[in-house]
Length: 76
Image 1 (cartoon, rainbow, N blue to C red):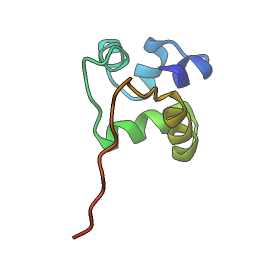
Image 2 (image 1 turned 45 degrees about the vertical axis):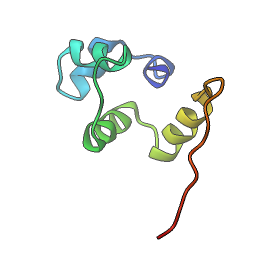
Image 3 (image 1 turned 120 degrees about the vertical axis):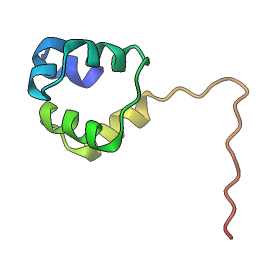
């Protein structure tokens, strides 16, 4: 998690702030576990960044897959 590293926190330190075991963060950072909205909000708050800062950094980190197509949005 780049946000964790940028904040200068170890997995152990951040896991203590959100009252979870270190393995919880390890699984999140290695894509073995997904977050729900409340868990994400707890992590953002513990990292002392705004949700919009997190969203902007996450959007910038997304790398499109070669050949991937965007789905067309339909209304109705």
